[in-house]
Length: 366
Image (cartoon, rainbow, N blue to C red; front, side, top):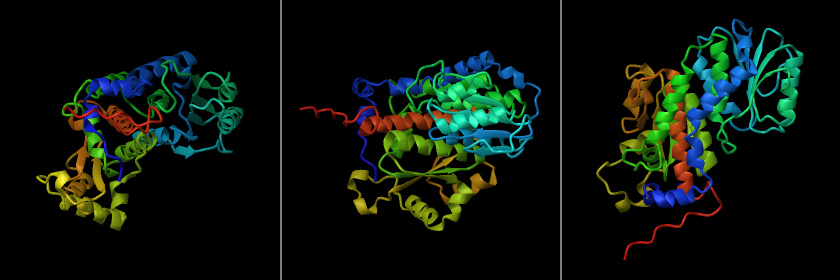
C-alpha cells in the first residue's frame, strides 16, 4: 500500500508552495505553452517541406524516457484507420528510404544510440522530425539533415511530453494523416492547468481530487478505447516517476483476460461500503486495489465501456469528453495533463518528488 497523503497539505497553499520549491507544478502548467512553442519551432525548422508527401511508412523512433509513451499515444491517435503503416521501433530499421518519415523525441542530448539512428535514417534518405536539445551528439546528427525542433519553453527534465506529442501531431497533420486543431489542444491544456491550479481546493480541483483517489491504493488504469489505453501508459509513467506508485495500465479487454486481477478488482468494488468511515475499517478488510476506467473516444453506448461499467459499477470513470467540447486529441492531452498534475500532488505530499525529504506536517492546533 502506498504512503498516506495528508490532504491538508494539498489544500494549504502556503505549505504546498514551500514544498514545491523547484516549481514543478508551474512547469506542468506550461503544457499549452509547450504545444504552441513546438508549433512555432516546427515551422521555423521547415516542417512544411513535408506537406503533400505521402510516406510509405511513419516510423516512430523511441528511446528511454518519455519517447515510448509519447509514441504510443500518437500511434493510438492515428488509429487503425491511418492510411500508412505506423512502425514503433527503438532503432532505425535497415529498410528506410526516401519514401519514409521518421519521428523521434529525446530530452537527453547525449543519447548516442538515437544519434546513430538519426544519422542512419538521414543517410538512407528518410525525412526526419526530431525534438531534442539544441546541443550535443543528437542535435549534431540532425544538423542540416532533419527538422530539428528544439525546446523554447524551459521545463525540468521529464516534463517534455507536450512537446513530444505536439511534434508528432504536427508531423501527422502536415502529412495529412490526422486532422486536429493543435491551437485548440493548447487552449484546452491551458484550461486544464487552470482547473488544476494549486490555489483551487480539492473539491473543485480535478487533479487534486484524482490524487486523493489514487492515494493509498494500487491503481488499475484500464482504458476503454485505444487512445485512453495509450494515455493510461503515460499516467503509469507519471505515477512511477513522481509518486513512486506502481500501477497496472492496460486496455480493458486485456485486463479482463487477467482473470485473478479482474476478479480481485470486482470483489474490491462490490465489497465497498460507501457509508463506512475508512478509519473504522480493519486494515485487512481494505482492498489495496482501486479501478479507474479511462475513456477518451469511447461513448457510453460503446460495447466495451458498457461491459466494464456492468462488471465494475463502482470504478472511477474518467471521461474528459463529458466535461468539455473538444476533439479526441484534445481530450487525450487533457487527460494526460490531469494525471501528471495528480502524480505531482501525490509526490509533493509524500516527499517522493521535488526534493529528498518529506514535507513537514502542519502542527495540530492547541
